Image 1 (tube, helix red, strand yellow):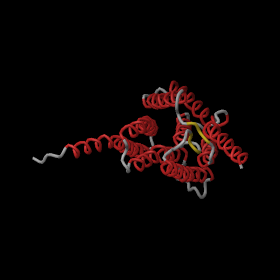
Image 2 (tube, one colour; image 1 turned 90 degrees about the vertical axis):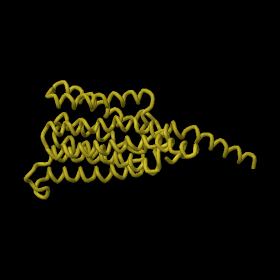
Image 3 (cartoon, one colour; image 1 turned 90 degrees about the horizontal axis):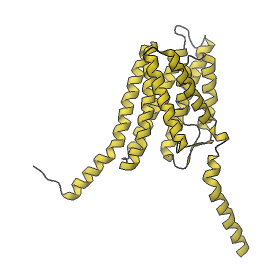
Image 4 (cartoon, helix red, strand yellow; image 1 turned 180 degrees about the vertical axis):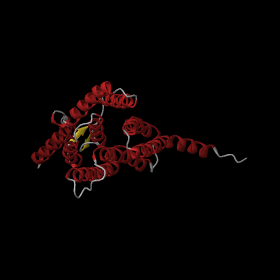
Length: 266
């Protein structure tokens, strides 16, 4: 039996610890694949199950980050995380919207509503994928996100679909959200009381779609309305939460003061 030197044993143990964040991302990818299979069924219960799995992905994704930071994620980790986010927060919600509001048997070239559904889904997939790729490149540095997080847009879409909102309201919300995804508007990261609000949103989403699966739509509707309110409040948070000013204000004032002192010395 081959025995490794102590140094190699320690390195192997560190590698195993590092892999846990990647394992969680891989599990999320598997859950996203199952959610896609549920969408193919197109029944109300299957669509509710798919939405439930999206919120499960969000919950696991919230654990993935702290776990990866604690165990030093491998180089492939950010790519796995971006892939799982793209599947769970972009592709699955997009196809849920398509399955719910696209009228079968009518071409998008002849039906204006179907054309708008196809356009909205295509734009969201493109902009959401770009947003996630950019986030993976910058590794989410700073105290705020630049542009609306795709998980927020997914929450809004799923809430409206679960409430059986009219198609024009869902599409209008998505078309208004797309510029926010690409914008440089700073959104606060979930810390402190905002982290509590994010956890509450996940609990509401999981419970609401669980109740829909149990055929209790009235209670689920109240939870989905609360979830929609929470998502809307966060979507409007840049109005009253000045992330950019909080992040750059002090450093900007310090740089201005230094430059003025240099000019005086000269």
